[in-house]
Image 1: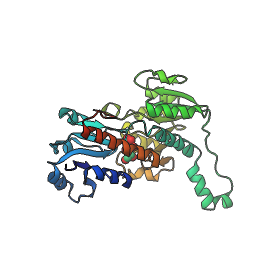
Image 2: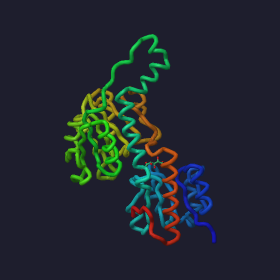
Image 3: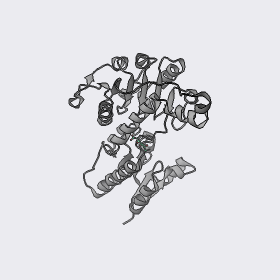
Image 4: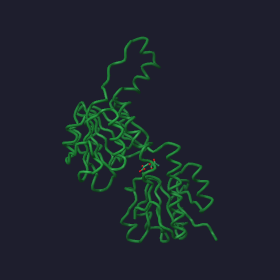
Length: 315
Ligand code: 8YV
C-alpha cells in the first residue's frame, strides 16, 4: 500500500524525520521555493499535516487540502491551528501535552533567577575584565521569599508554582475559577490585582482569542517599576506594545520572555533594552522532551491511520 502523504509545515529534528519518512510520504513545505505551488501540486494527496505549536495550520491552508483528515501539532499550544475550520470538516487535531510541562516550568523559573540576579551581565562582567578593572558587580534583587503570581494554573502553571514553593515564595494565582490544586496559594480572580501583589508575574495560560492581551497595559502598570514579567506561554497573551513602552520608560522593572509576536524576528526595540532577557522560544527544547513530543506526534498519526483512538486529541 502506498504511504499516506503528510505535509510537514516546519522542520522536525532528524530523528523524527527518519521515523516519519519510514511510514509516510513526507512533503516538506518549508523547503518549497514556491509554497503556494507546492500546496497546489500536492493538494489532492495530503491526508495529514504535521506542524509545530507556533506554526499551526491556517484556515487558508486547511481549506486548500480537500483530503485532509488530521492535524498533528508538535507542541501543547494549538492556538495557531484554525480549530473552527477543522471542526467544520471533521478534521481531527492532536497536540503533545504533559511531556513538556516540566521543561517549560524549569525554563520559566530559570529565567526568573537569571534575570533577577543579573547573571547574563555578571558573566560579561567577568569575561570583559570589568571584575578586575571595576571590582564588585552591582547588587541585584533576591528571589527567595518574595511574591509570585501565576497567571493560569494549568499543568505548566502548577509546575511553576511547585518549584517556586521551594524558594519559600508567597504564591498567588489567577484563573477562570479557584482550582482544587491551588492549595497553599492565594486565589486572586483579577489579573490586575494579581500583578499588584506580585514581584514576579508568570504567564502560563494557554492562548486563545479570549486570552489575547490578558496582560494588558493595566496589568503591566500594576506589576510596576520593581516587578518582573515572565512569559513562557504565547506572545498574544501580552499587549506587546504596552510591554515595550513600559520597559522603555521604566514603568515595568524587567521582563524575561521566551515568545514574541513576530518571532523569530523580534521587534528591534527589544534588542536595545537592558531590562529584558530574551530567549528563542525554547522552553520545551530539551532532547528528552523533544523526543517525547516527536513520538507523541507519530503515535497520534499512527492511531489515526489505524482507525484507533487518538492518544491526545484536541478536536
Ligand atoms: C513548540 C510550543 O511547539 O508546546 C508549544 O506550544 O510552542 C513549543 O513546544 C516547539 O518549540 C516546537 O517548535
